[in-house]
Image (cartoon, rainbow, N blue to C red; front, top):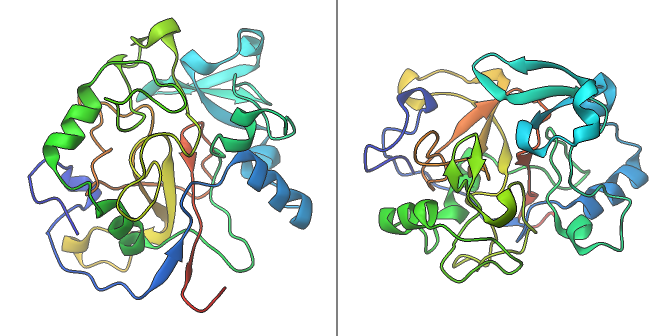
Length: 266
């Protein structure tokens, strides 16, 4: 694992390129959807950080017009992220169970675990992404190819990343941006969908930079895969070698997770 082409960010700890042995594990084909997360909440009574804090960060083009009055701040280094109280986005919520987009849109929140499953570790989070998707040319073409995403997307589009002038203008018809259903696009060689783009996916492992030989920062978790906001002009972390970090209590509209578990656990 690691960045073999010098395209990464030193602060992300993508290097050095190294061999990592991964024990057998199973992983969900898709990210957890609104519907699946709603089932989990009903079964466990889980309360998200966004609910506890009463707010979340919403990408400015996805903020519902009626929610403007709920905005109380923005990220200084990334002013397109608006801090908003209460539900503020334009995407369907989990209760709309008859809507396909509600059943299949990835859940955007901070990480959680179920009794028998958890987010994958850093190496397991990397290895599934590398099946049939390691060529730089393919990643660059996918990031640069214009075209509207439908369900399924256009044949020439391979993942859900930003198209247009980030973060001001989306060049998709109608200016559409945001998530697409979790089973959009062709799966990779392991049968996994959207391992690049759409939403960042949480890993269970604490973030550390390998070259620093540190034990990891328990206040930061590894995230992988990039999101619908990634673009070569700003953030090319849709690459399979890419990784980043975030605090476990962060709640944003471009983060999700899929479940993984050791072979023999179920």
